[in-house]
Length: 175
Image (cartoon, rainbow, N blue to C red; front, side, top):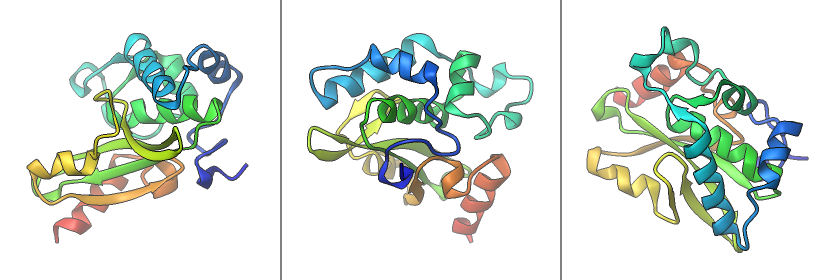
């Protein structure tokens, strides 16, 4: 399958048997209900670990696959939550695209969310904050000018495979 359509495998979002098994229990009556079930599963099954709780957070930043995040049992923030969300959506045949923004005037500050095709429309889904249908980029304008770093199959697809990649992209915007 062509993952650029939001379906199927991508480098960071491989649809494993375990991901299929988890996803099979999350299907709702509508796309929105399914998305909420996935968000709820992430919140209930993957502990949020802040950088201060990890021995070396830079070793994890954007380096894990959806399967690794699930096996590890924790997310480090919005990127991890979105990667798992994408995998579970795609396993159920719901097109889902990775999106990332930055607000350079706040330093190395950004956010990751998904765009999903739910109930015949593309909508923003923020797995970390549990929202569906809210304009995520607009919400972040309160922090300053918002720049879209990219959208695609996953973090690696838009060229962010580690902390240094993210810093490099945001630093270019600050010039």
